[in-house]
Amino acid sequence: MRKIATGLAFSALALLTSNSATANEFGFSVGAGYPYFVTLEGAMATDDKSQRWFANYKMALDDGFSAGFEQGYGDNLNHAFGGFVGAVGIYNGDDCKVRDDHTDVGEAIGNVLACTLKIIFDDETLNGAGLSYSYYFKGINHPGWRFRLEAGYGKASHSKEERAAGGLTISYQF
Image (cartoon, rainbow, N blue to C red):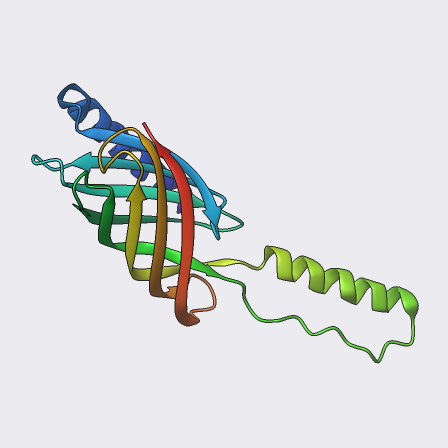
């Protein structure tokens, strides 16, 4: 199912690119940050170039999609506030408890290694809604560097745990 959703999202981005590239309203960015290691984003500017609609794919030990809207502010439209739905952050699952009543050293080491792997790889994407603030070094909808802060509330994809989450991304917009 995830492969189908990924394929549909990339097909939609490709369709947006082919229809909007001639009007120079479509932008693409690649970024890195926390909790998502890599973020790929496609965006379309509105007619007055002070706003943008975007869709992104966020990759970490779990991945997710989000879509949203930003409004630029300031003299050069360097500041943007927005909202989005979809992947708002990462939930690290339940804490692993290392037992200390082992009679065998091998069993104790195995328990510690199992807990370590669970802590590292037990990430789940939180899906919900959030707000964002972005700083565009050359202005919204212009090529250049961007810094984005996100905060939201969502439900974990597997455990159904609900909680607030946030993230930051530094990206380059082409």
